[in-house]
Length: 160
Image (tube, rainbow, N blue to C red; front, side):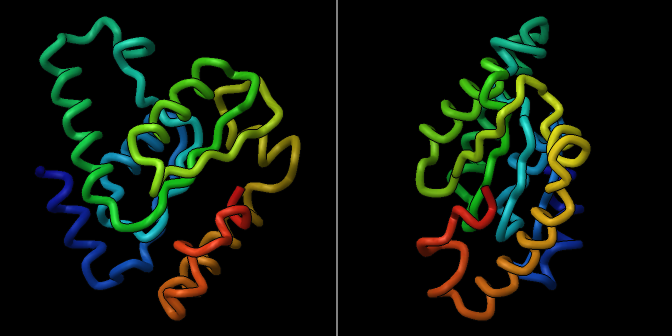
């Protein structure tokens, strides 16, 4: 709640024009605070802590994390686009499970890599990361200016 309050203070003047972008645990943070954004670009978020990196954490901490994740997905008014490597099986499965929890707002973008660091792959190997972010910003502004033509209609492929 503490960090949500701080971020809400920064985001409140921008409405749905807020873009959150993060990679790995930064992507997880973006999803946890997605209610403040019109669009979240989450690259390989770590949302399966019980099965992955957080399996050694106390159960109470994991329960709180999962509760916060569920609450955030329920409160999200925008879209979450999760980018993962198709051949990184853990990340791809975690992304699919996240989509199953909120199919209306979570959209998946698969990339032909086995790397967890999809941002590095998209930037160094594909040269696409910068243009993806620019496109996301432009699409976010169009969605706010023309709600019927933007993020929530038939153009999710622009960000994938």
